Image: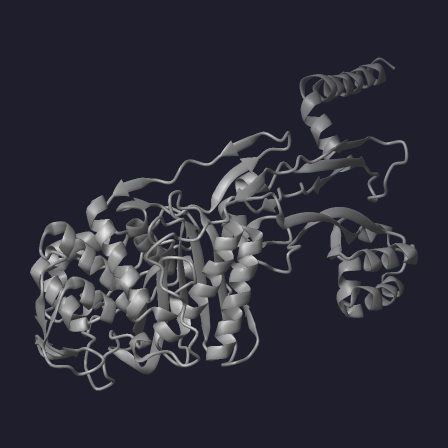
Length: 583
């Protein structure tokens, strides 16, 4: 008995020691282990903040949707349940059966379903099948500005565009639902249940105007169809602030076919060789540096050999005594090259960068490219022929627009801006930083170039951009497209554009229209009219009064004059591209 008592005593001592260890020393660790077995935490996605236009109108919103999930341990007959769910969810029976029998206690059957589908699932009343509210992203303006707004994934995370750029502000703080379940995964009726609601994200207020954005997309789509172009871009910017008022990015699957939003924000992410719109920089830089004056007359031939390549104006002509204004008005390639030669490659290269080429604009948009401007030290002999007329250098449409806005703004570069403010859940608005600025050319130089660009619209290559009652300044461009995967240019492929500002005497906005491979090819024929139509809408929207003097009536002739044909397009037989042309 003594031995038995001793043995029992030892056993009891071990049990007591173990109990002390479990309930005393290791209490917290075992409590956590127990909770992990009993408690199930379900994340509740927060509503993303709204994206609004400058006037508070919806561009992207979050709406309530229902997701369907299953606890396989609660399913009585997986095959019967799969057959019932298949026609409702539109999924194969075998795929659903696999989800209904998988290991674990949670699997999604459908995400963010419409109300009718969710209601049909609930009415089936299947054991183990449950619903969960989730927010879904919706573009209430029929996909307006979709390439700019971007995309959101199923898990509410920004995948592209502004949704990605401002994901941290928009996403909000997720909530969670905590429920207590038994070892079989069944919910304990009187068990613990905690609901921590999610916190919505901040709203994003853009600089875009929804009405103007719609009009820009409508007009651009009509011109893409009319000219059988591959696609196009139209951008409008407030001159003094750099705020982007509209940015349309469209494409056509086939010439003349339906036009849809581009898969990305082409105005910011894609580069092209600008052609004659680049002559603005060549002439402005030469005036600023004193390489030429507005009264100088250059003896301009129609052809010129530089290195081993021949450059020419579009139409042959005898040598003409042209001023810089004449060269700009008629878009003379040879005149622009002669001005660039006076300026020199180093100063020309420096001004290309001062006007914003070769660096990102600062807009911060995902995928924005800096373009390509090679340092003057690496230029070939032919580059002094191609770069002054906008070939052999690559830019984005937004960079080109910002360069024109610099001249419209009295010589001060203003970085483009797309977001005005964020607004938190309590309604507190936080304005974004003002756009960065820098002086590029003097007010006098800017005024001289603005007058030249007015002459382009009055009597040069841009007459179809004229607007009754208003002074308009701008420039046409028709640029050859670099060959993809090879040297030189693609035969017959052009990018046509028009960039300008209104009113020319006191610019309120700057705009640009660009078309990819239109027919006809000339920017003065295809881009300038759309610029004029878009500008008329902006003038009405901004309530800008007509100009009081120096106005040229808009052309009403059905067939554009010969002057509307850009002088920047070299004949097809003329070799312009050096071997290093931008791909």
